[in-house]
View 1: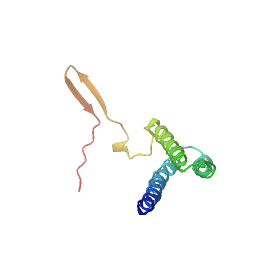
View 2: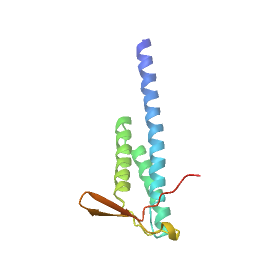
View 3: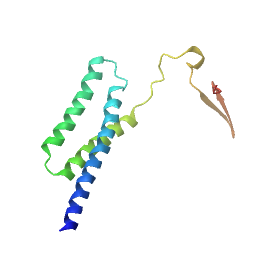
View 4: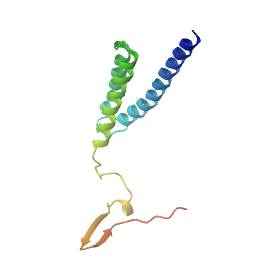
Length: 122
């Protein structure tokens, strides 16, 4: 009887830990969606709200705990894959000394890197 109680408590602690980890991951994902380079401010506000609503609906409508955790984790993986596929534009509001990107020039086995900025920490 005591072993069953310990297993139930371990399962509850495991689920709470899983949800805490997913909460932190989805906080990052929501901020990643918010800070993505959208040109329209309405999209910047609406898309994170839609994302959170999808997460809440998954958590409410899926009955089994393990399937809930799995579904919510899959949504996080999808956002992470999307985030990794974003190509940098290279068009930012930079200061003139650092506005030009570095580029390599190959001559046989010698590589020359142009516009490389070597900053020293103060």
